[in-house]
Image (cartoon, rainbow, N blue to C red; front, top):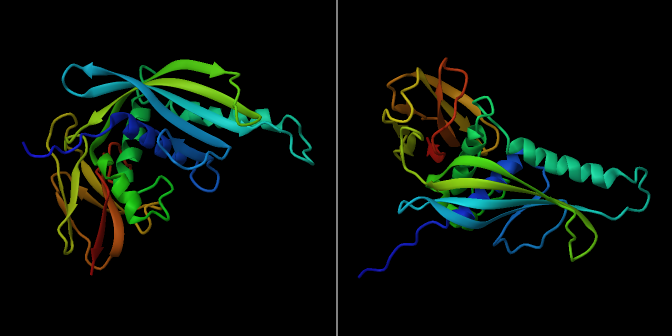
Length: 279
């Protein structure tokens, strides 16, 4: 028997995807707190958000679609600093910290019948890691990209809030802590009806595949580009049925493709990201 390739660790994928999603929900650097996942070796430095997917059940029998219990912990230094004018600053800040987490995890596009918009946001943020390497985007090394290469087909499709835990003590010192619990369902999915598969031919053309299925063909495809993976601009809008775009003369850019009803507005879910260099 040949050596087996490892299957993705869904719990680890969920943690990294949620951390990436929350990073962007806080507005990214320099306003975001520090983010960590369970197997992250780095020392925890508050203010921080720690994401732990700690227990799962197989949602669809024999399909490896897992529903995880996910604990999101916000931590803030609890000691009053010298010269502090407002002694209540710390507890208001921890409330704001966990408040952004709850807002991010409560995004809906169907009148609060479910948080599908959050699930899609987590999916997109997680998939970006396979190309961008880190949720901070800048400063990613080839090792960062390799470490997150398993995220290319990550897919989250269900979020449910499971309540809060409060007043927990932190053994390493005086910190304020807030904990929120969620049920998160995720798997790995290659379905170009949901996520158009974008590729680069190595010369000057982006190509993508799309099959009518979960989503119908949009009226337009919008091609977006970025010099750094952070700041994005619409490069072109192509009519329904288009599957290629020439990027000659654009240099090195990150690219992705969106659905659009009008050629301007962008609709989730988007394609994967590719980094392409064209003369």
